[in-house]
Length: 352
Image (cartoon, rainbow, N blue to C red; front, side, top):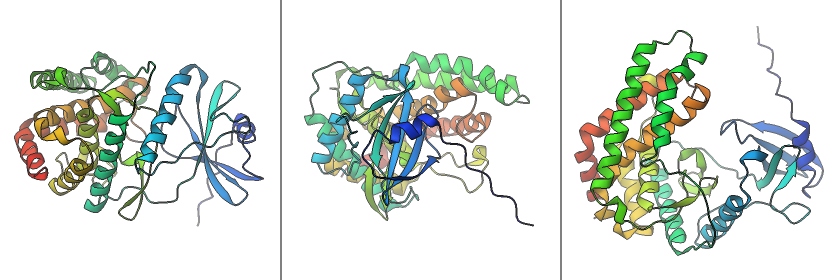
């Protein structure tokens, strides 16, 4: 017997009002877009035969200068040849509108595919990040933009301290002793990695504008071609190698065939790592060969930061159980600690 269709969640009234602030034509439908951050929900708006993405964020979290900065960097990236979905101006001429307690933006909906873990996609993703960094190096901003890096961030250690109680609120049967021990181990690994990055000259590196959150969820593909790089909300000033290390870790890691995240492979894929690195170096930071010692510990910091901060806030990591995500992170961190020298060899070989 077929199951009943699951009704779509209702569309907030302010989303309907916000869509009306843009000259999109007659609105045919507004549908929630799954995935992404719950703090910045998105909707697909179908109007006059075209599709758009309607994005909102809480008004208290809005930094107008940061939004303006992100738009300007997107324009610079597009001028450098990076495919970017630029925001569409509202009827007032502004790129964002305030409705009720939230601010809203509209972007063109980019048709394409999500990351399928093919080396060709890793190559074009690395090339796009290299182009982004080249554009960011030439981009200047006369203002103040606040954004925290995942490197050497004490908020990560504080988040790990709060993780056990946050997870317990969602997973009542979780082993609290094991969870606390895992968080302590991750805190030690994070602290050790931060120190290792500093020991090899991080303080002497110049900062530049970077994407700040370059991962497969923020890249849309058309086959092996990058159709668009999206979500510049985390754009910030920091050494390019930090952004590179995070992107490399994201595009080189394995995803398991089982929905149980804790069972996914912890190691990195050498083929995708090489493809991403080689393409990046051709278009981006030429000094990467002098910074390869920083990359494995930066990857460790990225792994720990990516998991701990959202789990400390919500007790979960997207649809996955937080306890399973932390098990995977612990195994991946251990793999990187044991195989850092191998990763550096792969990097150097890819830069030749």
